[in-house]
Image (cartoon, rainbow, N blue to C red; front, side, top):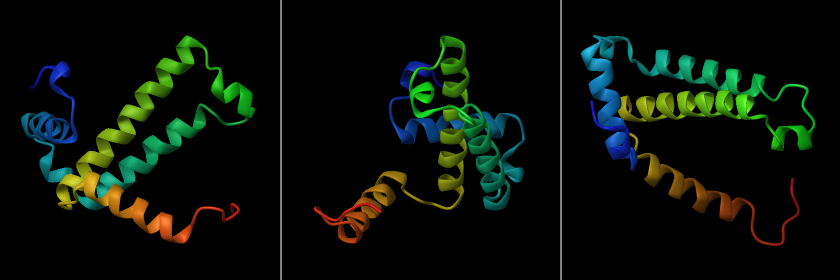
Length: 113
């Protein structure tokens, strides 16, 4: 596996995740359905840390809570990268395209929502 300091871009992260899963025989289970389900579970675990918190409380996490949130954010990213990998989605290109679409949908000066 790559050194964690080498994980500076999505391609390297994807490759490291491929190696990790392959070494454990998990690739056969990494279907779009399974990865999407795992992603939503991890996203729910992330949300759980903020359930019932006020906006101010959600911005002022204790060090322990911040560490737990960091782990959940990492899990969400990992599953997102893995599902994009199996579906051959370039996450950077997809995000760029979505920003362009959102700029058209929500032009400057338009009130939200």
